[in-house]
Image (cartoon, rainbow, N blue to C red; front, top):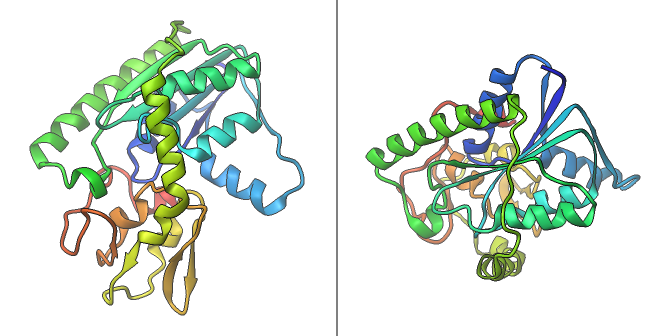
Length: 262
């Protein structure tokens, strides 16, 4: 298999698990690229905003946030220069993929890039702040669905399959726009309880480096993507937001550990 790059964005590990599994199936020439790390490095250097991705196949793998793309993924795509003969865009989702694929299609179309394959991978709904914790039976079922869909997606890429998606999803675009507006203030609503011991786990797992430590406690900044990684990974459950209160059961992919994200 010729070289490929899988560019992924992940907070609780669902998307990272699929990225790692696809890379494993495709073979050792497949490189994993963290979108969060790349975007943080760009922000820190402020030298050249171009992101050059050169490989026989480039795979963009990301979760759906409120029926759309995470802001970091959107900005990554806007700055990316793809030098490849095969491009795949794959969305992982809990409730619904919404118009995430339609959105990335429009973004790439403006750059005169045609996506060869669009894929959808169901995973566990991890937006606990709104939906609350999932039942274990539901989690087990969704993980099985993710395993099957990930294997099928890898096979599609290996076969160089092609397909298309409809690019006009106005309702999804509207909901996604509201979410983009919301995350500009959501970071102010996170609360840290007295159980916090300053371990910095939240800072380490944040995919966009939106958390800084202030006098031994996490402080959330406007770079926050509202991915909920901090909430789901906090070993003392000391970060609260929305329906996630003290004692709420956390979720992150069972086969992804802290060392995979840090």
